[in-house]
Length: 267
Image (cartoon, rainbow, N blue to C red; front, side, top):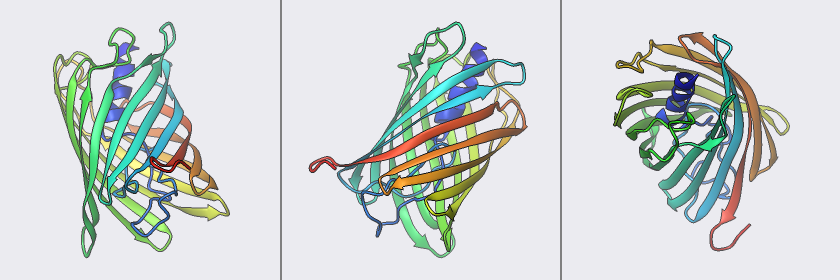
């Protein structure tokens, strides 16, 4: 069970967890509109407006093939630095049977939109990050490693449908009993409107095989979910993740994205 939780954490932070490009903002959008990145693995290239802060939170229920299960509550804060950059702070709350809930490792990253609407690559962003071993390995909430990662992101729109392509790599410094020294991830995500305040999101993502004591074979999974925009600044989401190959658990998730407002002016 401990290894299963560590695997879930690796998936959570390897590519900035959390989800889909539906409602992603362009530079011309209302800065108070929420920009959901969770609950999927893929993220989009857009950033929160300068001086604005946005919170993403939710709950994920995991069930593995051996009937082990666990719960994770991802929490992400995004702060706009410039028109092209945002600061991200991430940490999950992890819980498993027989263990107390505990805060996971803290990830700090900066998303930089390097290219906008280029003919072939569309809008491209780079997301370098570092994860600190702040979570307890005894409770299964942390990996005990310092992780340096980078994600390359390409986002484009076809009418009302968004497409986000991600490729990420993470190198871990420390003991590899709970997480491999090197891992990578890829993701392809689509999102769009459905009816009224409701939208849809679908995603295919995978983790290539890893080596070492905590290494695992390659895994591929699919996500299918829906969103509900209560207000421009508040979006709820729910859905499922189903494994196609490998040890990815079955997942049910629910969550919300809340654009709090400008740091200097409130809501």
